[in-house]
Image (cartoon, rainbow, N blue to C red; front, side, top):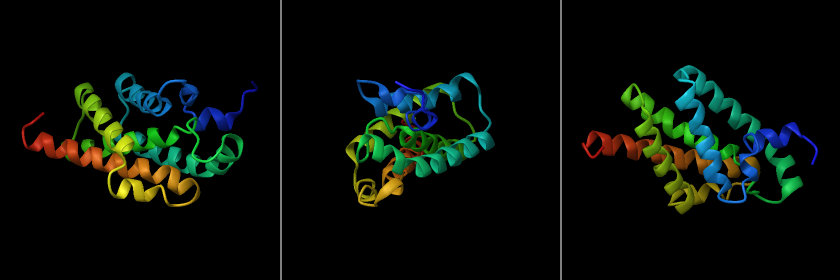
Length: 154
């Protein structure tokens, strides 16, 4: 196997190569820098945008190499999870590890179940369709986390 920079990006440092639940592994990988590096919100915004644009640019290459919406492509899970975190962070002014875990569970729930408009995003062709369903799942997760926090459930 030769080292391809494109694969490193779309698989989020090869997490997309996981034989079990590569999307879940990608989202877990997205959580790690938030826990261990204490990233500033402005950096997370920049990282999210860069990963989205990189995923958009590399989606055609990835589909050519691995087929339509391939499981190795987990940069979309990274972006979606970070969108959830950003929404929660903006709404709360902070986050902590327990909230990151709750956001992870909510994000994976919405990403896997593909409720309503999340499923609709998959109908969009190309990289936008691959990425936008996860962005919308992230929006749902962030909003639901804020709602349950403000209702006093967490």
